[in-house]
Length: 124
Image (cartoon, rainbow, N blue to C red; front, side, top):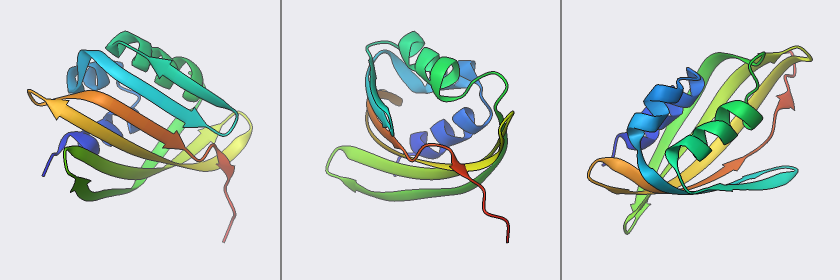
């Protein structure tokens, strides 16, 4: 089973652009969906720009990677979901992302991501 998904989740949680770039192909085919917008890119740099220039802003702190779940592949397509605890200037939030990906030569070449958006943390 591929370890690239959990490693991608950890790199995103660490907001580590270099680690993300090392896990994806230079010409990664990326599409993403957040509650208000769709995103796409055709390179590792474009993916990193979406992740750390739009989805997670510099002031957003990822406090914890709460959960990582790997699903059985659908033929050549792997799946990972992960949940993040976040602190932003607006408060405490939780977000979950689901990623489907294909690989070649130990790198992600095709990536589809769905994000729940930042949901206000419910105390309790």
